[in-house]
Structures are given as structure tokens and as C-alpha cells.
Length: 207
Image (cartoon, rainbow, N blue to C red; front, side, top):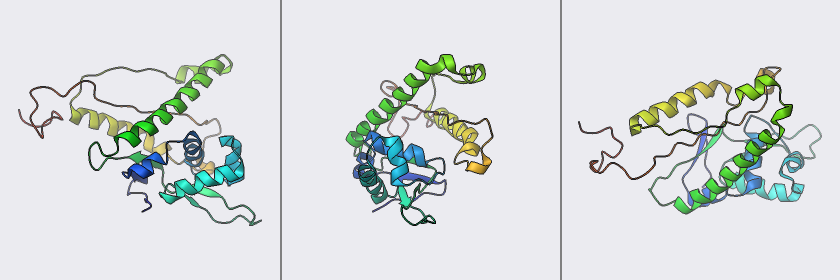
């Protein structure tokens, strides 16, 4: 069954088949291109995927099957129908722990490869970037000691900060704005504390 956006505008995928549908570089590029509220035809998207319009149409239909994209209103010439994202973002959620692990690993590989490519492109060309963009950009990672409650609070705070900028329409984008990739990766390291009891592994129970 296709998915639809939730009350936060997210398309939440829990079916392993839907998650595997994302595990293709061209499909991630399509989602990226449509995510900011753009409506693009298969021909226009082919220019960013590097594939033919027919191959791009195939990937669009695969994404549409799971409710990730949908056909928009026909343009005036009626020759090529544009496509648009159904929600503001796509989120992977496992309803049964472990049931989607293989599919999630496949999409994670594709996700990391895509972000590595974008980061490499920036580093290779940063000498030509204006100073204000070089100073604003950041490639960093750091480990923190957090409870599950603190991690959830921190991630919600980050989402709240970024939410006003999601899905900015063309007429709302500042003149000097650019597309900026902000990739979030927050994963617990190592085994849960040995003292944690069932139902208390998140560090929020007991005292």
C-alpha cells in the first residue's frame, strides 16, 4: 500500500520493500531534486540523474508506488507532466525491530555514498567559495554521553530549528540563498548499559 505524509508532512516508510525502493542513487537524487517543493518533469529530472527520460520515468513510478512522489498538474503545453514530492521529507521507521535491517543497511549505504560525494565536491571546490560560505560550512563529528531522553530532546531541537526552512517555495527564498545539505546521523555506540533492565534501556526509567 502506498504511504502518505503524516501530520508533520513526513512520508514514513516501514515496509522493507518501500525502503529497498530508495536504495538506488538515482532515486535519492530524484527525491533531493523534488524535496524543496519543486515540480519537475521526467525530462528535467533526467538532467540531474544522468539517465535517460525513460529510465528516470521508471524510477519515478517506483517511488510513486510507495507514495513518495506523485504526478502534478499538467503544464500548459500538456506534453510532459511534472512530478512532485508528496511530503516534506522521507523517514524510515521500523515497526518491528530488526524486520527492516537489511533494507535499512542498503539505503544507508546509498545515503552515505551520496553525502560523501557532495562533501568531496565541496572540499575540492572550496577555494573558489566566498569566505562567508567557507566559514559557515562545517564537516565535523563528535561523540557525546547522553541518555535516550536527552538524545531525543536534542534531535527534536535540531528539527525545530530547521523546520522554518523546510520546503521553502521559490518566492520565499532569500536572494543569496543556496541549497545546503545538512545530514543528521545520531546512533548509540556500544552495548546498552549492563545495569539497564528490560524497558529501561533508554536510560529514562528507574532511579
